[in-house]
Amino acid sequence: MLVRVRFAPSPTGFVHIGGLRTALYNYLFARKNDGKYILRIEDTDRERYVEGAIEGMLKSMAWTGIEHDEGVVLDGERLSQKGDFGPYIQSQRLDIYQKHIKTLLESGDAYYCFCSKERLDKIREEQKAEGLTTGYDGHCRDISKEEVQKRLEAGEQYVIRLKFPKGKDIRFNDIIRGEVVMNTDDLDDQVLIKSDGFPTYHFAVVVDDHLMKITHIIRGEEWLSSTPKHVYLYKAFGWEIPQYVHLPNILNRDHKKLSKRHGDVAVEDFLNKGYLPEGLVNYIALVGWSPEDNQEIFSMEELEKQFSLERVSKSGGVFDVDKLNWVNGHYIRESSVERITDLAIPYLVEAGYITEIDAKEKYEWLKDLVSVLQERISYIAEIKDKAAIFFRTEIELKDDESKELIRAEHLPQLLDVFKAKIEETETINEDFGKRVFKEIQKETGIKGPNLFKPIRVVLTGESHGPDLPLVMKVLGRQKILNRIEYIKRLLDD
Image (cartoon, rainbow, N blue to C red; front, side):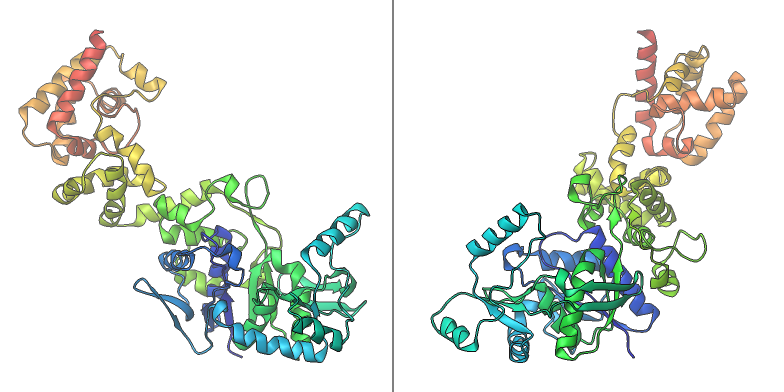
């Protein structure tokens, strides 16, 4: 059996981190089993449709490197489709759903419902008042064929509902949760075709998954309670039931479902902050799945080899931004300085530190600047704050230790000698930076932390930080002299 899985988002806005993980797990499962990964667009809820959302989703998924074998693709800026089981956009499959709903109507597994919205609202209010579970009361279940035809010819508005038998247990197996059982008495007669002629998710997903030969349905646990309805539909059609896998939710630190109210939850949020795709994908794979050993850093190829559904947890995984930053920081440090420089330039332009012309003319200098900070950032947008030390004219003392060092008794002598050394040279490079401290130590007898820390505070405002010779090279001769003079004035005051 060829494994076929799918990721089927709705074009209602951004790609949620939970959606990214669902796509990733489908992708990894397909690759692990030499199967196919399909991307289908479920756009039958026309009220929630957002223009441009499909294109945005495809760009986000392309950025992550999660590539699908079939489905909707971007050809430049134009939507296209690839594969033998299309269309892969549900709104283009309406004739398929109409054909299949007729099968259920003829078998008696579905029926026309003419109840108005007002009647349905009234029923729900009465059920709530009596403390009952809200749901459809089956008012139209047993209308005769003659009356149905008469009302259809009269142009009455209708929906088509699934007709559950009474008191029947529906069972299915879930790879993560084991056997799940639900009785039909606890289920609503689900709407299959809405009054606008569009199918509901519950109907379209079953028809599409069957016709696209999906073998494993890997999706979020919010669909677990709806799965008995889908299982019953498979049985009503006489189709083979696929294997179900319901993934646990991604939680925030309060162990509540991750949502926009709690901060960044969209793939685009992390892209815009300058997270690397391999960092985000590596981390999100670990939110709910545990490898056999304690390995935490995975390439996509390693994930493809090691991933298994059996090691996905039943309980929700907590999205820990600090851990994400640690993982992403690893990839930043492992990247070439050219790659990080290219990614950092838009943020430096946005901060007003440089112009786009500067970025071209001063590229080598920018590489030096980035190499100083590359070890100190967790995502690229952080460079806006970290790079401030190279552009501001005044020094901001960051901590108590820096303030104490600036008052050190030997600092005036140290500054005079340091200033003289800078004035004697035309070019500040790393070799000069390494040599000058040896010369100062020899002339003054000041050495170790008493030498390096005060100079670092003078140049950066911080007592700890990146290698001083490279910091000096990036600052350049004039900025170093300006900072020495600034601290001298500060001491005089």
